[in-house]
Image (cartoon, rainbow, N blue to C red):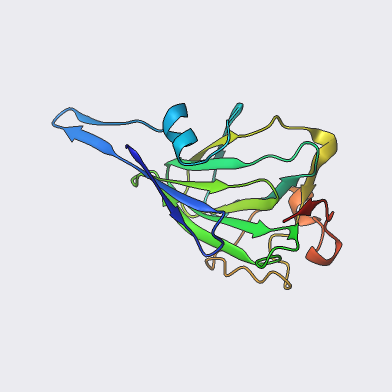
Amino acid sequence: MNFKAIPQAIPDVLLLEHREFGDDRGSFTETYRASAFQELGLPQFVQDNQSRSSKGVVRGLHYQVNPHAVGKLVRCVHGRIFDVAVDLRLGSPTYGKWTGTELAGTDNHMFYVPEGFAHGFLALEDDTLVSYRQTGYWDAASERSLLWNDPDVAIDWPKLSVLLSPKDATATSFADVDHNFSY
């Protein structure tokens, strides 16, 4: 199989490794195969998105409430990010906890964030390009944001001067998140 799933500190969050084939022309890598993802127990993905960010940009922490919750498969195409998932599932043994990993355009890793989690990342380099594959469609009325630096979650972000959108700068505290998910 070309994909390997590695459970993270929160076991439902996965780091996916995929193989790269190189020769003197460059390289080739397969980033998605429906049958392989199904064998790994991953859901079907229906929407692809892409963002480009400068160093220090924080995007998130975003989530959509039920019935429009989405899981995400995140891949850094160019540059580097610190990618984070926060468990929002009531009753989960890891409720309110976070896990994160660095992704780079030069590695062969993807970060799977299931439904019921807030997701965000910090761009560690200029001209960072991130691809997101989602299990559901974006729904503006269902979109929510958790404050990226909420002290109750206490994410250990890399130390950079950050740039936020107005929406992310005024996001909800963890104490006030929309408790719409259960474990």
